[in-house]
Image 1 (spheres, rainbow, N blue to C red):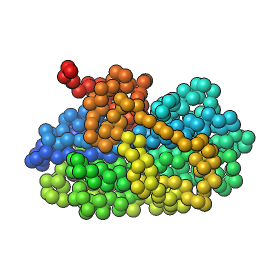
Image 2 (tube, one colour; image 1 turned 90 degrees about the horizontal axis):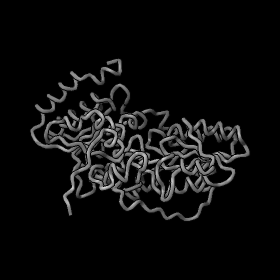
Image 3 (tube, helix red, strand yellow; image 1 turned 90 degrees about the vertical axis):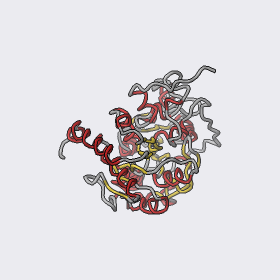
Image 4 (cartoon, rainbow, N blue to C red; image 1 turned 30 degrees about the vertical axis):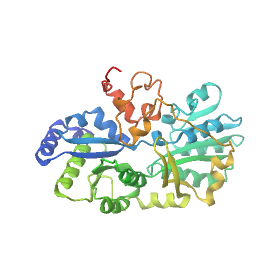
Length: 368
C-alpha cells in the first residue's frame, strides 16, 4: 500500500470483517488506547460493523482530556499575569478549567496565542525579551521529543524568558492501572502507533506477560484498525498474549533512539495526576533539575489550587471505558462541543466529541 485511499478500501474492509466473523467464536472486549483511533472507529462506524460479541472499549488516550484541571487552572493563572505571553496548541484553548478556559481569558485581554510547534514559542521568546513566554507542554510520549527540543534550544540561546508548563503523561502506566482494576473488562489492547513510533514496544512486553493480554501496535486508518482487531482476536482465540506490530510501516521495536535520547536528556519520570482518573505513580514526565529553570510551575507561584470537576460530567468513567458518552445525562444537551462540561467533548481526540460528531444518540432513559 502506498496511498491513503488504499487504507480506506471498502472491499478490503469487508474482507477483514468477514474474516473476523469466521475467526471469532466467543465474545471479546478490546480497548483502543488512542483518541485518534477512537475517532476513526466511531466516524467510520467500524465499532457498529464488528461481528456480534466483538466489543470496543474506548480508552484514556486523549492527551487533552487527561490533562488535570489543576494544570489548566494553573495555566490560566499564569496567562492572566501582566507581561506573560501564554502559548498553546489550539485544542487546549476551549478545554474548561474550574471556572473558565484559555479562549475566554484571551477574550478578556490576556495574551494567549495559538502556536503550531513549541519552537514557535521559543522564537517568540527570542523576539520579545521583555515578555515571559510560556508554552503549555501536554501530551503523551508523542509530543515529548519536540517539547524537549524546545527546552534545549532555549537553553542554547540563553533565553531566560522562556518556560514550559509540563503535563506529559505515559501510556504503559495507564494500561497497568486499568488492568489492576478488579472490574476491568479489557482482554486486549490496540496500542497507539504514533507513541510506539517514538518509544517502540519493548515497554509493552512485560505487560503482556504479567496480565496475559495481547497488545497490537496499530495505525489510525480504517484498515489499520480492522487488521489490528483481527490480530488481537486471533491471539485471544489461540490463548496467546504477545505484542504484535500491525503498524510496520512506521514502528520498530526499539522506536526512535534519537527521540528517546532527547526525552531522557530533558525529562524524568514522575507521578502524575490524570483528569477524571486520579494520581498514577510514575505515569508522567517532568523537567530534570538541569532544566528546572524552564519550569513554569516553579517560575510562577500561583498558590495552592483546588480544582473541582463539573458534577454532571462523567469524564472519568468515559476515559477509563467504564461508560459511553451517550450514557451521560448531559450528553448532547447541556454538554456539546460549543458548551462542553468536560474535556472529552471539546478535544479533537475526545470520545464524547467523536460520538457527538457521528450523531450517536443518547442512551434512552426510563422515566423516574
